[in-house]
Image 1 (cartoon, rainbow, N blue to C red):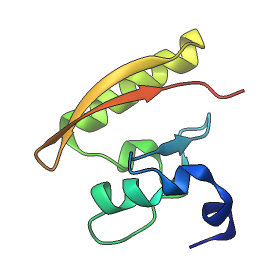
Image 2: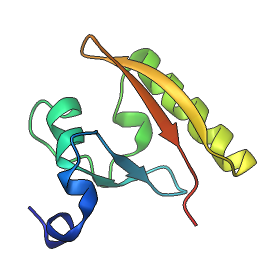
Image 3: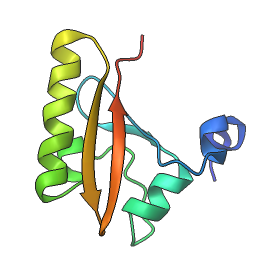
Image 4: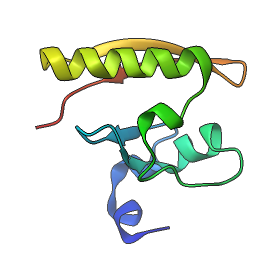
Amino acid sequence: MSSAEEISLLGHLDTPILVGDPEGHVVYANPSFRRRFCPSGGDPTGTALANVFGGGAREAVLKVTAEVLQRGQAARLQIREGGVGYVGLASPIE
């Protein structure tokens, strides 16, 4: 566990959290996200958002990310991964 995870409250949430930068790369994934979406135990930090998810989930994430960057406003999305449905929120961080 990195020192950033040790001090971040996001690391203690059971909700999967994924943070991306404006260039479309993952800059943070909390332990809950890694457990649920990275079955091989990897860390997606530095990975392009387009490569984190597959199929319809990938399209949903990319579409909502583009909308958020274009409008500058948060947007909700729904994905299904590993047989489980998730509701997400993509939001610009300033």
